[in-house]
Image 1: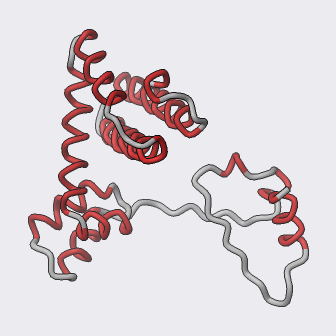
Image 2 (image 1 turned 90 degrees about the vertical axis):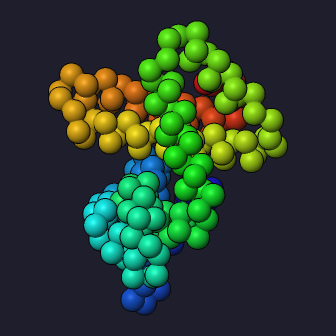
Length: 180
């Protein structure tokens, strides 16, 4: 119903109206809505530009470099990491957990996943935190994909697809332990 209302609004805007629809997944929009839109894709911002911007706000160069690295080209994420240094520490810990997961034998992987799924939190809070963790893992794998050879890139693409599917499952209220 909301999609149909949005479609009606797009077809009959008042005056010189400009409408911005921002989405992470355009496939969730109706094809009739997508066909009436002009698409702009925003590319990630270069690390140096983010470092310079963070330094300009009075942050030390060393921290600015770290923030730029872990913001993955997203200026808003960089600002959030600068405001919350504990969040920066959590990102580094999740990257370490993912790297350990990738190198561990199968029985160790199950232990790592079990500890992740077994962390007791409120249902909604836990879901959001797991989604954040999966985003971090995806970005780590994306970095690997961009800096390796063709065979490794294919493996990274498969892993990213699996992480994307996992994020979708978690978003559909599938129990995190089952999804993982």
